Length: 78
Length: 170
Image (tube, rainbow over all chains, first blue to last red; front, top):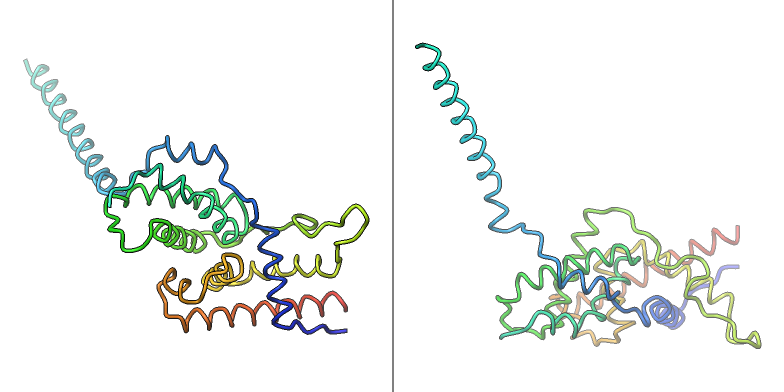
């Protein structure tokens, strides 16, 4: 037996579905609290400087190592 | 327009969350999208010009976040597991129609197969009982688009229900 779904029947089913699934749904308190207390994950202007900063730090470290090895070389030459 | 974030969030949190639970099909994803929505709200609140009501503005952000979340994550968990949130029998055994209960489950399953834009119009039309014009304003499309999406959504659901029923009777 094949039952055709009339528009009225489908309308009623959709309303029943939504009321069963969504009625009385409220936000968990913990979730609200998390949003109010947590900081926004930075993906804007600050975040785009992170690779530049990392590169600058790596460059500075390299220069420091290079300079100190040069100092050691000079010291040993005496 | 000067709006306090906490006041805004408290005023529309439940409405947005209910939409997201319905849209995402499960509470786990709804929680994630709810969180990212309000992070965005907080970030963009200073630039909110008041062209629409604050709740409409937040709802649009939630709709966008839900769409992008769904694009990144393929499969969704079902909203209704068998027996959950279905019409229950009264103490005298009345008020429960097993055929309708089964079909409501099928509707929930069919909903998972609908694209997000179709699901949105179904939600606003059938659950929020919004007129076409208001839905059109909310989704930023003409009234004709709302009507055609509603029609398409119902046709797809009907096809799903028929296929499901045929499969069951075989």
